[in-house]
Image (cartoon, each protein chain N blue to C red):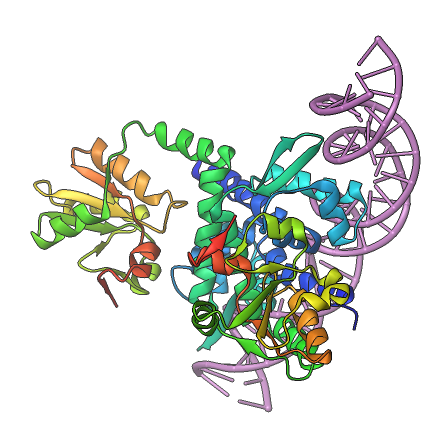
Length: 219
Length: 219
DNA sequence: AATTCATTCAATAATTTCATTGAATGAAGG
DNA sequence: CCTTCATTCAATGAAATTATTGAATGAATT
């Protein structure tokens, strides 16, 4: 085999992986299942797409080797194929945020309209967790909470927050977190809590980063 | 702006970056300019494509924020936009190698036909460099050598090796290296040298990795 | 064995990406 | 100011990707 021909095949194969990453819906799926294994129907619902379409995108991701499936009872659970896939995904997301001005503008724009959303850093939270000075809320869907969450965090999915406000202490500081920089559930929870007289902040970190850095988790 | 609408825009923007990565020619270009800044014409020649086509692909990469240009005299030099881009590229390549069996088969196949190509590790080479026991050859095109190379390496581009064999010492061990795992010039040089009675090995590392790890370079 | 239902597949039309060609641009140097 | 020439642009047809629809599959349960 000639060198040129070989190279062509090699880059074509590599592009199978990158082509799998080249679609916005598939990126959203990756971001979602970076949380843990979930079935097709749940994915379809979360990304607001017909099941057949979600399934087709999942096939592409699977063929490229980025995700794997596992049968559990009636359901096919999809998850990232390896830790390296998570590394690639988060470094891609990172490049998008730092190098692509449209993205940073978009995020800034969206967040600024929430006027003065207060953030809390990782270290600050760790300190307050030690002193038991904080009430930490995981606002992701409970399925994702059950797959793993920050230690001592309470699960109150964003959807349920309105009807479960009585569980939230008024004397403690509240901190909410969700999936990552692209996830807005924590933002909305914090805004809602502050409107209702709580002292709420958003964690700068999110669960995947927290886990990646070896900080305390449960389950 | 509704959350769903915002998310859609966000992932669409992120996909601009991943779409830029989703083409085999653009991957080859990235692998090439990971060496250092080079002009369009040189890129076109290396990837064996018409200049206009290379230019269009470079525009895509530029618009996505993955590469940058700089004017020097008559030429437009293209280079990776940041260190993070190199990290993304090499982790993508890494996933391709470890998760995609077609790629590993392809590489193994190609290399095994070269029957017993001997490798030398980074640490082994560093030791031998200290004792001056090794003759290190950079087989990349001289333009790339001039943009930076491993300390004490001699530039003998693969094309010129045949007519410059008399420069190569017979008593010392020879080590050749080139661009990276996808680069085959070092393989071919080593095979050629061994056929001609030299003791040649291929460096497991390549220049970009060497540089990334802060090992000694020149120029 | 039949039924259920989560998931996948197949076909299609709409959209996007791509390579090719030849012309346009525009900075550098005379 | 004019020429050169590296690079980009614009137009085109061919190829690939995508969403949608409805049917097929096949494992789990009855």
